[in-house]
Length: 104
Figure (cartoon, rainbow, N blue to C red):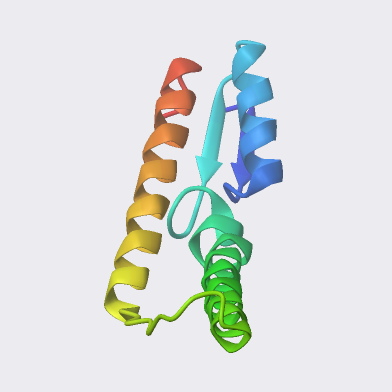
């Protein structure tokens, strides 16, 4: 084995893909889910929750202006379900990309 990459975050993914494109043998080591912290725990999860918060704030603001009259019924379970579904879809797409370069 000539190349070992530790971590499947952005740098690990890019490095592995580039080595694969060059025909190099690569072993990618990841302790948890592929795609690193951003997709699985960090910025993408925070962005999703931030978008929901902005929606709620805008709804409340427009209600106070009298533009709309609505009561939001927010389901935390559905939010978590959708975030989890999105994570799984993105992981699947990344796996397909890696298979294309014989990295999976």
